[in-house]
Amino acid sequence: MNSFSLKLAARVIRAADRDHPADGVLRDMLKAQRELSPEERTATSEGVFAYFRWRGWLEPTRPVYDQIEQALGLAGQYRNNPQIFTDEQLMARAVPGWLAAVMDVSPAWARALQTPPRLWLRARRGEGRRLAEKLGNCFALGQGSPGDALEYRGCQDLFRTAEFHTGKFEIQDISSQAVGLICAPLPGQAWWDACAGEGGKTLHLSELMENKGLIWASDSTAWRLQKLKRRAARAGVFNYRTMAWDGEARLPTRTKFDGVLVDAPCSGIGTWQRNPHARWTVTARDVEALSERQQRLLCHAAPAVKPGGKLIYAVCTLARPETLGVVAAFEAKQVEFARLCISNPLAPAASPSPHVEYWPQQFGGAGMFVAAWTRRPG
Image 1 (cartoon, rainbow, N blue to C red):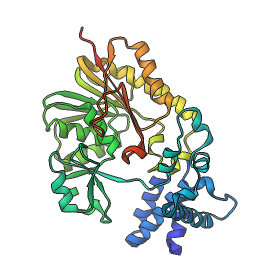
Image 2: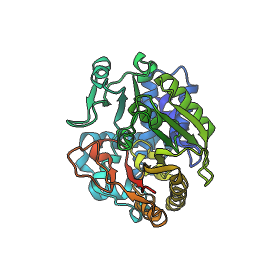
Image 3: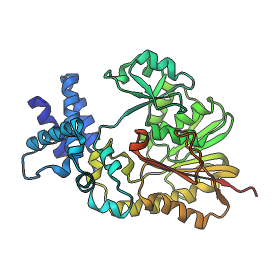
Image 4: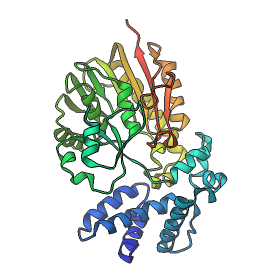
């Protein structure tokens, strides 16, 4: 790592805090440094993420430059011989101590967090094999898995490829892709992506619906919906409408939907492999506050489901207050909804279950929880 990349990584680390996530600070600083070579950009990113991934092992009294180099050394040691780090060390140092009170912290999960995340693509329906041949370095999840879900292990900048600019694929985590497959919308139906964000799942729903029917996509933040529109234009998606919704009881439309997806804001614990900075900014108080918000969102969105329709709840966290706690609270209030058993699209041979949890060590994606209900007729 050259001195310029080291200094830039240190600037990112110093500027990052709870209100300024490291990945956003890094993105902005790299954008401002147009003279950087691709190798320097990669080195800067690796330095930043290694620092937060291995922060529990670092000596905070040492200069930031030394800590970055120490973190990169630890990352190299783990890559070459992970067994020199004991399970006890990893569970104690890779995540904050409060976490064990709200979720199961296993050695396998802690080890997964210390490895770089895998990059997943979602090809257009039925075009996974063709895209893999075109891009190269693409690998399917496994036999029986979705054929259009590909792991990319190459080095090229995918955002610069012709296939990306013509909407041949989206960069979408495998666990996020599983949520769309669990929704299983049909062509011609009406769906509401209630917390659409920048639209990754909206685009997937449209793909599954063959661009037929209608999707309402809402979010509380206007700039996210604007980004959704740009992504939809590139992907050739047109069967959607956007609307603002802040999650309150007053619904943004009187439409009754065949399906409603509540991909609720959460603590993001499931993304800590990809976003290690968040390990040190999220608190137990955040988990409790978000659980209350998730319960409100789910209860407020539920009336938009038509009788016989589906309600899907998804969060990229595995904390019990945000997962099983929200499910129990919802079912205590909404007696007109019956739980649906879910077939796991990433493990077709597994028996259906009342909810599905995805862990990084299982499928190589983010941690995710999904539950589903149907609204009873009448």
